[in-house]
Length: 465
Length: 166
Ligand SMILES: [Zn+2]
Image (cartoon, rainbow over all chains, first blue to last red; front, side):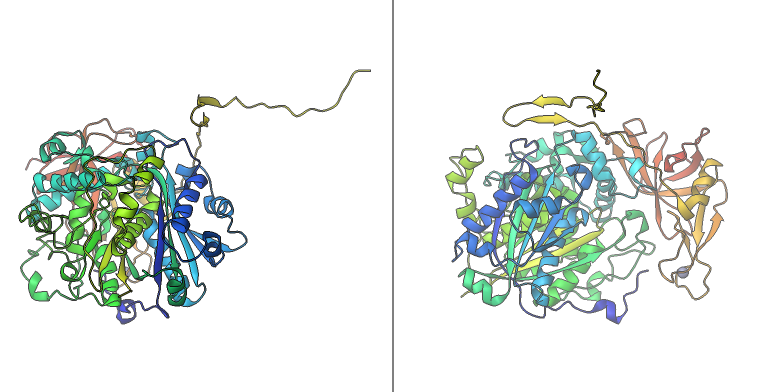
């Protein structure tokens, strides 16, 4: 049993406010030989400086940067140590200091958290957060083995060399414990592949049916290929700054809160413990959830995600995420991990996760009512539909949240020139997925590693009237 | 008079060109050997060679965790003291907590696909031990028995499970 003492439970607090003002993405592709890695990062960096309506010349904005944080997951994918030094020089940011961040799938979120710490502490006024991954130097099976090096090499890696085989047992357990159907899982895949159809950056857009998902090839039973994230090449960048600079740069800054949690690398090592409660939860809610001898978080839930939400909601004053948040971008590496997270971050009480999909709350338009979903998830297309260039992912999700809150979804997804730039044609039936504007509009994103070893939860809140 | 200057020469192999358009792509083969230490887990992996399953237990009377750890770890995360090794008596019988059928593993997988990967709960163990089922079809709650490779693999794959009927 993990016992948190008083000091362990301290809620993070910025010494001064932190804002996000701009973002940049690239296209995400399985095979992307047209560009070297640093060239892709340059494209995301340029989009961030040039296309975000910043009130200064791009080079003047670059001249404000004090510090850079870079996310990249795996040296062996890149086949290049200290890739961040190469990128930093390529972006023309020498001799400023930079650091590389590596926390597996949560690398992007951790990079944003690290950048925010620099602004909050006063080390920097303006921080570039950028991330990337190049997963096409090896074939898919080798790529899966590389990723599986993030499992425990002594006890786990040799038992599959494939991450879907570490998530599939969680899926089986969750299905049995909380009555999750294959159809509900498939609906997550259908939704996210569909939303990717509106994104010019998406690698795996598709209009699938539940049947097509369930009939697709098995990776590790019960998970099908169409339920698994993309393996991508691409980059993403985000610009963070203090309050004064934020208003100098944009009329639409978003205030940023972000916090993280950790749990065992091996699912095996999860011991039973009491459920840490979110602000809107009570012990009474979970009195009958766990039968004698059962475990929390078991294989059903992620303690790291729960703790990231536990800290960040209190930091940002979120009382009930389903009511307070206008959008979530979740780390849908697999349909099952997406569903598991609904309980961890309180979109539903534990045990009722499937209802977030079945109720229609998770959709842009609720299929049951034809009205907007209460708190839509992964309008970006997520990792299943759009990308998982691992070191960039948690930044990509944050950028998508930023643009949504800034009411710039159409600008960055609907402009035919962006589609053309990446050699695509904007579909005739392109659909806007812009969330409605409101005072205090806010979006949250989850960046998640391993089978739940590191998780960050970030919140971006509209700061203008 | 004959030239005797020393000349450095290219002694590698030309990189294979995969494509020239739209960008030049070459192949760089990579084969490396890592020497990996099992460190203080050596008794566990030595035990597997000998057909024995060893776990660790914290002997600190003040420690809140007095159950066995499997996966074994040498030091207790709760009180930070070194733990002691204990053999789990034979036959080692556990209960399937959950499982998957691996249809598509990564490069270099050493188990023939498809196969059942299982997570096993053991009495008195605070953790859940991952392994593979040699034959049969798993169910949650099913009893399985540990067996060991005759020719040691010297890795975690040395232990596997079979259905335990009664
Ligand atoms: Zn102890």
